Image 1 (tube, rainbow, N blue to C red):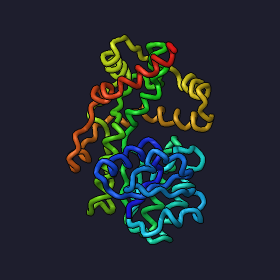
Image 2 (cartoon, rainbow, N blue to C red; image 1 turned 90 degrees about the horizontal axis):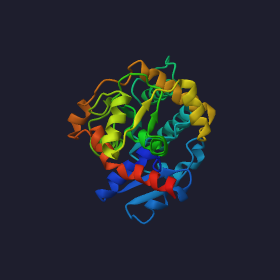
Image 3 (cartoon, helix red, strand yellow; image 1 turned 90 degrees about the vertical axis):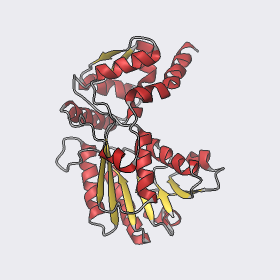
Image 4 (cartoon, rainbow, N blue to C red; image 1 turned 180 degrees about the vertical axis):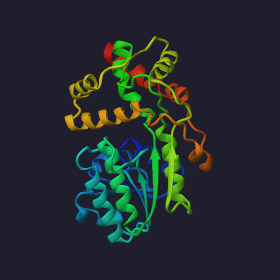
Length: 294
């Protein structure tokens, strides 16, 4: 039995859909079964409700599980506690192998709290005695879809990146790697890093959006404080806004500028170019346009 945690989030949903397309059996963990109602009609998807911070709620989810992928919400306070609690519960339940969705550049001394937490979780998993695999992706291409409403309303992309290069990766590429690691052997003790095939500035990203949308999208290099204010204004909790800004600070130093395609090659995955990603998601921007007109 394979268990997918974080199954209703961005990466988790993409991964569950890989299993669905292949008609493969899998169990998914969600805090509230109602959040997984899009999967309830699939006989190959078993839904288990439980909370990572409450090990006593995980018995059903972990029963007879051999491998699990570890994904949780990006909580700026509780992410490490959440995932470490789950690791402990999985070990107690007899899980053999945990595949952790991590991040590029985990470092216990990083100025970015998420990178510190990923390093802490990875170390705890490595010390657990279970088999482990770390998947370390770059910044997600899907994050630019969150900017759709602003892009359409103001023909601008507001991001605090200066002229730094970044090589974002498509979540669907990550899901393919996760699926391969979960369904084949020989990945124990391995670290797989991956980025997208294009290292580019946000000016170049804006140009790609312009071509796809048929309108000129400008890159506005906002300050970190302006970014924080914007995120909070849109409803993001202050601590999470601070954590996001810490990641941008690291990216401005070039921490995610390298093109890393060895993992794609190893698993026979064609890396998704940014232009292809934008073309595939033009409807997201059109929907934002219709919503504003409505």
